[in-house]
Image 1 (cartoon, rainbow, N blue to C red):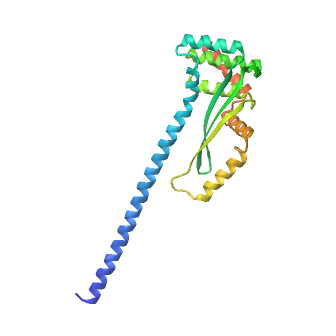
Image 2 (image 1 turned 90 degrees about the vertical axis):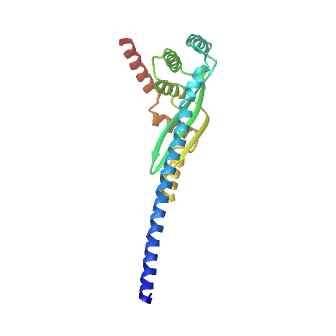
Image 3 (image 1 turned 30 degrees about the horizontal axis):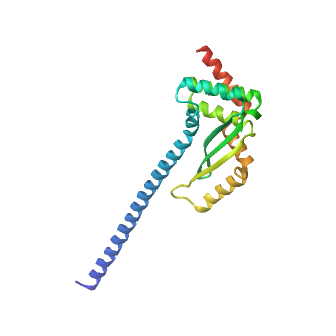
Length: 218
């Protein structure tokens, strides 16, 4: 084989090898991206479901049957001494980063405004009677326990989900904004979550009264 022929073969082999390597790198990158995206989605779904069930599990602690729960709910509110808890989960996106904000707050019935307490009791009884959905119960439980920021923050958690492929500085910018403006201290966390959920006491009362009227008319 002549020298120029060998050169052509070598050049061809190099070019083919280069493109094969490039193609393999692209395939590996795509596979990794798909795997990472699916894992993030799965992990997030599991985490969200666990938090969404917290209030329902708490509700079940009032009794194993509808009759038992109704009796205990009325007794607890009549005694006016129990501490009621509420867990909250909200998903929020800032920039390219997804956040799951979760917290548990509590407030004793003895320090609640009578109107807040009465509507909270109604929420428990309506849910026990299957008259409102779990989503509605979660909302009312949060709003009336929170009481426009008067609840104690028992714990707070934050899950961050970065894109599978993203610039680190973009993620850092999003985190910096969120921590400086939304999660700086307990009161900021409570205010931020209340605003996200449109869960002021007045809003919750208006929604609950409308819902009760619809139930009455149906």
